[in-house]
Image (cartoon, rainbow, N blue to C red):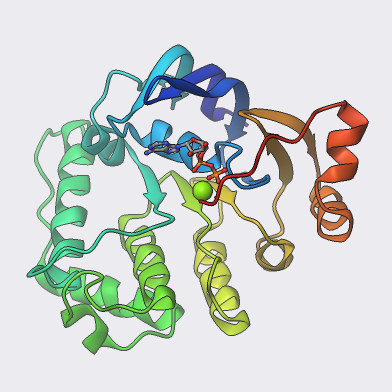
Length: 268
Ligand SMILES: Nc1ncnc2c1ncn2[C@@H]1O[C@H](COP(=O)(O)OP(=O)(O)O)[C@@H](O)[C@H]1O
Ligand SMILES: [Mg+2]
């Protein structure tokens, strides 16, 4: 299997302070990885840096996506290449219905794939085709079509915002999806539905980096690898069993074993 996302010695500063301190991680085609870690360890910083948020300043290291260094690319270019981020705190866009937002996003993504197509012709996405795709994905997430007529995230409950993020992922069909605590604040049924949405994508052309605080979603996602992140580095990696240990014993035993002092926790 080939490497799909390779992060090498990544150092990232936020407002002059080093948050990621030499992080290495590599995801092969079709793999699902989970990252767990205490608050403030830099999980969202990693997610935002991978997507190219301008506030996150990469000072050292490399990120290769499908073999290409993406650090100089704009966030929209990364998205069109097939990288997707479900935000921990999704944005609200007033005046833009979710359905229109999704249509524009899918169109942009299709144009990119057409650039590399042999005939060079942009594949036009018929509206009927889009409706069909959207309907199919709404069913997976057990969402009503009326939901897509509402303005993006405006007045959405926490759970609805997270489902809207996963709906975006399902229609965009990224090759690597980064989910930043998509399970936080969801009731148990919603966690299951969100996980089913992710699982419906699983296959050779889909890799996933799921950031989470809880083992619960991992029961459904069954990740191939689990990583523990502390103070800007991955300090331990293992299989699914590692998530169970964390759920039972918390982070302290691992920190102790590795001789790491826990930094003052910040609420995030
Ligand atoms: N946009 C930001 N502005 C200022 N500080 C930030 C920002 N993003 C992250 N940080 C700081 O970086 C550290 C790691 O935060 P974060 O990546 O959100 O951790 P996690 O997601 O693991 O809880 C924290 O100390 C946080 O205050
Ligand atoms: Mg976070």
